[in-house]
Length: 141
Image (cartoon, rainbow, N blue to C red; front, side, top):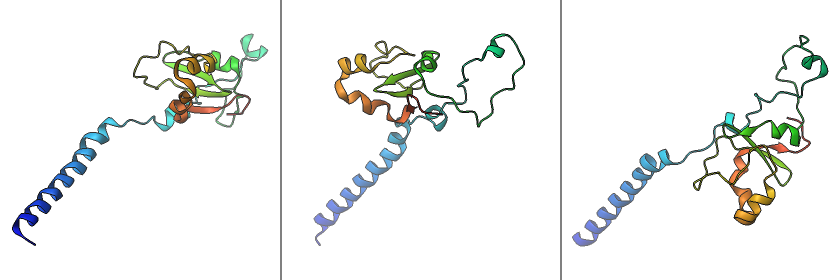
């Protein structure tokens, strides 16, 4: 190999190294994933109150083995930006930690948003929330 070819290969190797190193250092900090807790944030889900709870009777607190059914009324209890659940095509999503680049003003927490998001984004909206899935309506969590 000639000296000129060697220099070109050396410069190319340095550029590749700098690109990879830059991606790891800079790009790694820019990529954010929801935490496992945010994805499966079911610990705060309380089952519907029974008549004895409403009357003020002493009821043991739910254990981790307590199952709750995903219903529209359960989703409706998660209706503020810091605790935001929505229904999309029969599935429930906890989007409390979702960050929408254009603002989330068109998303109404605690409601079925299938029609609204389809009108705004078409069918592609379903890919936005994959990592925020809680489960299907009617499922036990």
